Every structure is written in C-alpha cells, then in structure tokens.
Image: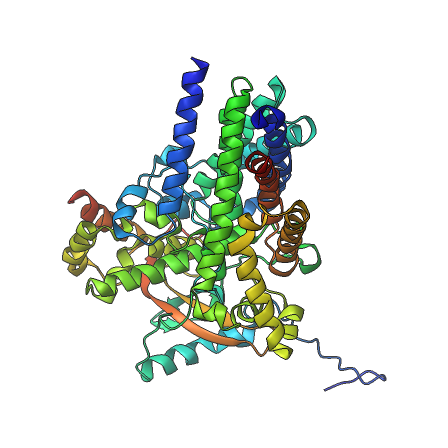
Length: 181
Length: 265
Length: 105
C-alpha cells in the first residue's frame, strides 16, 4: 500500500513538474487548462522578464460635487523603512496587489482591443472591479458621491521623478453605506 | 547504493526548516499590516469579492485572517525549531501548508514567486512526511523541489536573455529606479556607471540560466555557485525589498545538493 | 524665506517618498488634459509592466488567469451588454451586468 502511494506521489510530482514547464510558455490553449488551477500550484518563474517593470503605480481618486471635480487623493499602499526592508517588508502585499490590479487592467485593455471591444466595456472587467471597489471604500466627504479613479505611473526617485497617467476611469456613484469614514 | 547513502529525509527536513523562517516572517508581516484586510484595504472582503470567484463565505474578515496568520507563525516556529519529522512537526507542517495556501487564496492578490516556491516546498514535504515519514517519498520530494528550483532559475535566466532590455543593460538601472523594487543609491550608481549595470545584468542572466548546471560541476564550483546564489538573493532583499526570496530559494539548495550527490556519485 | 544662522532654510523640505506629493497630485489634472488634447492614448503599450507583477507571473495574469476574464464567449456577451452601461454606474450594477454575461455563456 505504501509503495502504491509512493508511486502515486511520484507520478503526481512528475505531472506537476511537466505542467510547470508548460506554464512558462504563453500558450493560449494552456490558459484554458490552467484556469482550473484553483489552488494555484502551477508556478510561473519569469522574474522581471522579458519586460522588467520600470514604474511605481499610484492609485488616485477624486470626487465630483455639483459637477465640479475635487482634488485627487492617493490610496495608501504603505512604504517600507528602507534600512530594514531586506528583512521586514509588510507593505509588499499591498503594493503588489496594486500592481496585480493595474497590470490586469492593462492586459484586459489590450485583449479587449484585440477583440475590438469599445473602451467603455473595460468597466466590466475584473481588475476594474477590484480598483473601483478599493477606491469606493475610501472615505467619502459628501453625499451623493460621484467618484473617478486614475492610475499614475512614476519613474525615478525624488522630486524630479517623471509622472505619467496610464489609466483614467469612468465616473461612478458610490452608494450610501460604502466609503467608510 | 547511492540512494541509501544520501539522507533525503535530512535534506528535506533542512529545506523545510529554512523555508519555515520565511513562512513565519510572512505571517508576522500579514499581522503587522492587518489593516490591508480592513474595509479600506486592498484585501477587504468588498474588494476581493468584487473579482474573486469562489464561495463568498470563505472570504473571512480581518480578525479571522489575523488568527490564521498567528497559527501560521506558530506552525513556522515549530518547524524551525523541531523540524517536520515528529508528530508535532508533522502537525505544524500541515498547518503551515494549509494556512499559507488559505491566506494566499483569501488575499486573491499580492502573491509572488517566493510564496509560490514556499508552498511547493510545503506541499512536497507534506506528501513525504505525513502521515508518516517515508524515505522513498522524501527522495521524490527532494528531486521535485530541486527540479522546480532548477526550472525557476533557468526560466528566469532565459526570459532575461531573450529580452532586448536586459541584453542592452538598461533593465537593472530601470528596476532600481523605482521605489517599490528599487534603491535610490544603487540606481544613482548604475546611472553614473552604465557599464557596471550592463555587466551586472549579464551576470544575473548567465548566473540564473546556468545555475543548476554549475551545481553539477566540481564541488568547489558548486559551493561557490551556491554562495553566489545566497548573496544574490540577499542583494535582492537589500536593494529591491524581496525579503521572502532570501529564504525560499536558498532553502532549495539543500535539495539541489542532495540531487547532485545522487547524480554524480 | 527665513534662514537659520548656519544658512539652512526654515522651510521644511518636501519629503520624497513613494507617495505622490501635494504638488504631484495637483498636476494630475493638467497631465490628463494635456494627454487628451494631444490625442494620446492613455496606456502602457510602450511601457513594460511593473516588475513585481512579473515576479508573480510571466504574463501578468496573476489571479485573473484563473477566471473567465479572457474568455472569448464572455467578452462577446460583455460587448452585447455594453449598451446597458449607465453613466455613473455603481460597482454593484457593473458586477450584476458582468454576471449576466457570464451566466449567458
């Protein structure tokens, strides 16, 4: 019995590794298979390649009152203390979450363009939902609340860094009950 | 013969203990930034529910997340001190595996390759040690972890080698010129000395692509390669904030050396 | 501008960190208007994705590859439902509309 189980485990490892190898290639047919990897056990190992990231993402939002746009506010993603960041970096999850959403949104935009969908349809994408939900949960000053978000990319350090707008959303109503203070 | 002489159980035990340090640190980081799971954070129920496919009742609130994170920390501490070989270690191994996967699932976002590799190590070790330690399954798990680690390095290296940005030497300065994964001083140095950036970039590419093959060379070369690997991950931790990688990837070196002994003896 | 005897300014230096400064936030409107007036497409087509996302997944799919985000049938249905989008839709309305697209697959 133990031998059989060892054999099953060995076969499982082999199939897992083969799936891992295949997953390193951008194969459209494989996306239909790996979509069922609910436990997310099949890894992808192309770190910072082939296109390394060169920007920091910032999620900003503003509210409209009586048709007039208010000031932009940035959603806090924290910042690690540099001297200790090599050991202790608790905000990495937030920052990575933002990057996941932004890159998901931009990829969705590319896919929708390939399929010739109108830009407004991006509002129905999952990464858009995530970003909208995140900004909608930020404090609301006035009701009713009409809110818009944008994604800003910064390149470089310090006050001379360059900024670029990489996404501007539609305007959405934040229902009463959302947007805790 | 060679297999009987190689302590695969010991190798996997050591791998788990090293990886468990990263598991514990990750748990502590999640507790430290538990606000991220509260209503205004990216891992709040509202945000995750907006895109996450899965039963809504599994999207637990911040208090439950913190409790699970504390369980993860405790399990990691047991694994580091006692290892996964005895009953309490086996229970800790199962707990660490389940909590790591559960917290990753619950977050939905924000994972990275270090977390991915750590979970692979934990799952493989669980299959080897639970419900009882099996030398045969431990050998398979060691081989699997070594194979995954090798795949990771080679893929990372090759993906960089086919990139014109990396080959042109501008990748490292560009990455380091960010706040999230950069370092102002290092970015400034590479801007001032672009050839250094190019050399370092090529060094990273070739090191990653050749890493598992270098380990099959003479022992001195293999040892030097492993030391360079540890230094590389420490440098990534210092300069880029990739602290979790410094535990998960070096943890696999024990498995790689065990496989090396098996292949070369 | 007031100075200390040693020549240092009494004005606090703006802190340079990850967060956008007040000045940077204030210029966003101008950046957006400028880009739109010039007909620039706001996108990252000429800019690589963030490094950290690559750390997780080669093709920046992250968790979204596990869903029907890129499913052709779903996107086709989404296109059909797009005219139902209101001005100032709430998140709940958007989710419900997408739910119709997924269920209609």
